[in-house]
Image 1 (cartoon, rainbow, N blue to C red):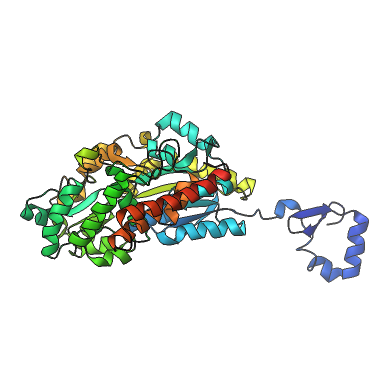
Image 2: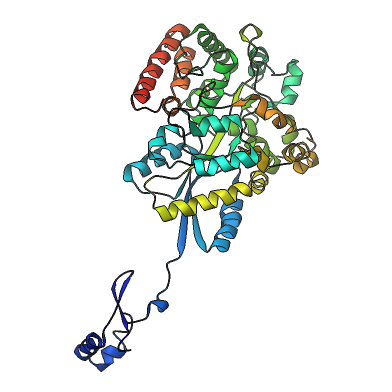
Length: 466
């Protein structure tokens, strides 16, 4: 060694030693120490081992298990190898996602990429602006309106999340049973009329009226189809109106006459289990119900059919609207280091440009937010080989119309922070449950919801986000 040797003075800092410094250090330590003990400290920087780059994800546990296997074990491994990055994907159940997001914000540390499964506008202050990713993708591939309204805040002009996909929420129904009673569950009115008869046969309607995401989505469908909404296009609260009262009256009748009381305690997978177990005749859900039956009960599978969400009463406009079942978006926390932000965005750009693989990996569960990323979507859906092999070649046909009836939380406006809090606190399921269980009249329940929603909107207006 001698002149030109280097000494490590901290984990990632080195300093060149003068010859005099080296000799003094070597003499003090003894010849043996100089040769052995000082070797880990005295070495040229070219011998230092560079720290491996890492990228961490928080994902939900997918309802199509094969997707997690593909994403964790195949796609991220390929990408990591190509970019010399170690990728780690942590999973949590769907119900835990909001709490985990809040915990990471409170701690100001967490994953490099956080996957939300509902719109995340109430986390906007903690999230990086993603406009530099979204706008080029729009130019190249276009964007679905519900994705734009779920990731962009027109008040702050900020893209607070980057969405590559959403999940349509069609109806699943027992076609054999509905054929026997002579109804097609194409409208909310038919659902009640046929549902009464099917409940008497032991096959009730299955809609959660509880504090879960499925309930939030399904009950919004009914509210919208009855010509009402939580807010209008200008983000003004309008929920306390006569159409809301009519929707509440309808759900109360459906609950009492065509449903089982257990729906008041359902979670996000209860309706899946009930339909797959032959215990209900109709529910709203992503296609994970059908995909699971393909694998677990191919003999029962042909009895189940997918259909569009029900349309509302003709005298209230006859609307047919369905909330996205899951809305996927990635957020990058503002407290993430600049190096990790850059790496995370690189992954998202690459993933977006390869998203046709994810569509197949999700078994059509996830539809593209940027439609141009899957050029032959309708052809793939109409010619699903598994459905054809199991005698249901038209099983997924209605998904080809999904963009005509799928909409966003916050319809007809944007999924703003106030709508996000209304969603996360389950105001809408509570409103319907209060009337269904006779704790309030429909009018009282609508008034109660209006008061809760007004308070939430006022808070977020005060923060400048609505």
